[in-house]
Figure 1: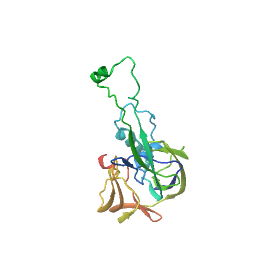
Figure 2: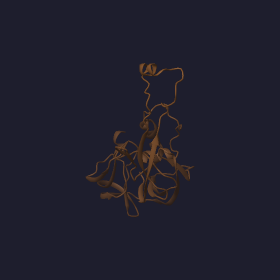
Figure 3: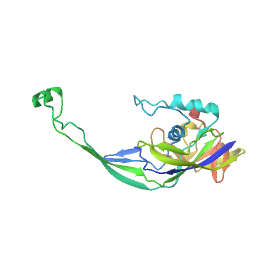
Figure 4: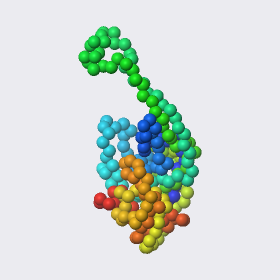
Length: 227
């Protein structure tokens, strides 16, 4: 079984809204494996979407035929920055041909109320680790883009091993996606985030491989619990 370890280094501020607490929008210090799969180019999708309906099942399940699976990325080192943003609409612009009475009838608000908030972003230099199980694609990019700002990140291979599976009780200290596991964990730490919460320090009884001090289940596949 081929397993390759990667490091991912942020070269820009990475932002996506994991939690919204009033005016604070926080980015979790992990990178979801579905987001990584898109960013690595294993799925070819247009950058522009005309609706907000996700198509994860249609996009991800065909990758199983190639025997390739990308794990979530766990932080080795990370830092945060908090930036303040202020968004103002343009309702203050004068309408020379429309009176204030007509504006009220049309439902147009005369006042201009700007919106503001704070974004907690992962800082450049933050370092993450993830694995790809299976044969590597021919043209894996060195640079990828992630998050709402399409932030730039550097990808590098840190080692490839051909591993023999083992059977028994094991604990996976790496991040796992529970939707992509056909077996249930006996206990775990839960990282709550959309679109699917992730597991860490999960304990299993089944088949696994060891990459250094990391044990990974051998049965990981996109939507493994439903296919």
